[in-house]
Image (cartoon, rainbow, N blue to C red; front, side, top):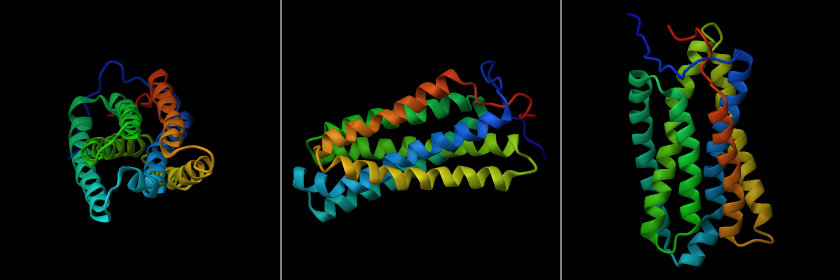
Length: 201
């Protein structure tokens, strides 16, 4: 059985050679944030006076909402054909949520914005992977391998960047400084139409 994906009029294509690097860089930016937060947790815990149990609650709530992000956008990407819009919303929402994390003064704020950030991060996966699968029908493993590589690059570079900044910045200032890559990626995606022409049948 073959499934047809509904495509909005705005989902037009650029060349396949640009699709893969855009998706990989975008995926890297989403995991940059996750790696950054892990590096910041000791400073956040000390500044806000959190217990280890509360830190555990924060991480578990992020995992729970991340599951919702995968399921909801997986369905939406197939039904609505607005995969480009979902990708843009993912990176922009993450940037906004991490700005709000930087402004947080209590656990409840961290729980709300940390969980929403995780949900936005995982919202990236279904539309991005479906695009790559359709654009590289004979090389899906290759394309998805690069997609996964982008994630690990982000989680590698994010902690390094924020760790270096923590030597001369507060955790809040270091977090704000690292938000810009995600916002920049949102602008790039907004200016680029990242569905390959003719790949969706």
